[in-house]
Image (cartoon, rainbow, N blue to C red):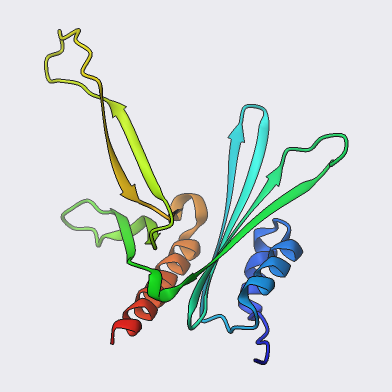
Length: 192
């Protein structure tokens, strides 16, 4: 098999994300194993953990047969390792994907303004992991002092990416929606 180079648009997206782009590219190329990329989505995230700033990068690359998911995290530094990056990459056969979901939030006044997408959450499930959401049980009585235990749901959730036009920009939201469309079509092609 002749190796197909990673598309310039994906290289540019990794550079724009600015989070160890050479490391991300090297790991992605290794996992692609020469396959051409049909579509991609690059999602940088920054979180705050007390006084520390943590960065994370998720890269999705769609080939004809696989969805390659790469997570890049900075590891806590110490004296021996002043800077470490941890990369975890998974190749999922498209035939294993059971669900491609999209949850959308629209800005609209409900009457005169044309609704426009404000955010979206892209969810992809292939049976690799499950998400558990637990919360305290409660009742309608505001005077109730009883312990109602816990309630929760278990849902398949291999990956969920939230993109907000306000936080990430309208282009990032458009890119996520376009990736969702291409991935959905690729999964549907397997059933045709």
